[in-house]
Structure formats: C-alpha cells, structure tokens
Length: 85
Image 1 (cartoon, helix red, strand yellow):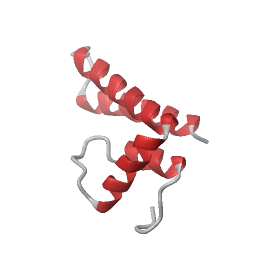
Image 2 (tube, helix red, strand yellow):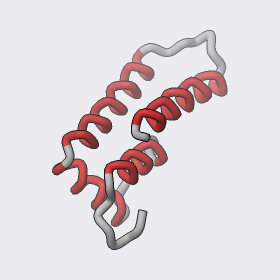
Image 3 (cartoon, rainbow, N blue to C red):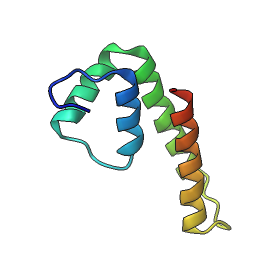
Image 4 (cartoon, rainbow, N blue to C red):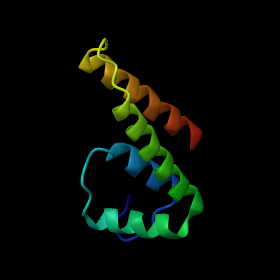
C-alpha cells in the first residue's frame, strides 16, 4: 500500500489478512481504519475475520498439531483472499 494514498478495498483486505495477529499502529493502519469506517464491505470483512478467529480460538482441536492448526488457518485466509478477487 502506498503511504500517501487512500487504500482501496483490495489493499485493505490484503493488509487485514497479512497483519491479523499484529497490533497495528502504523500510518498504514490509521489509513486502513479510516477506510473501514467509511466502507461497509471492508467493515464486514473485518467483522467476519474477527468472528472466524474467535470461533477458532473457542473450539480448539487438541488432536491437531500446531502446524496442522496453522495450515487450517492459512486455508481460511486463502479462501478469504479468493473472495476479494
């Protein structure tokens, strides 16, 4: 995402998926937050991602290794990436 431009929906979705597990405080994060406040599609994507993560965390699968859990999370993220194309 270019620093001085307002991000488009695809850039916001890419950014959210890339930085899901980070605390965001950068200039880009501020622009993403501003975009989400005015874009119902991106706000919906963010809510969906939060729900997916919450549900996933509430229903641990002890029979799965950490690497297998990571693979499943990656598949969900790839699905989301495919939805925005």
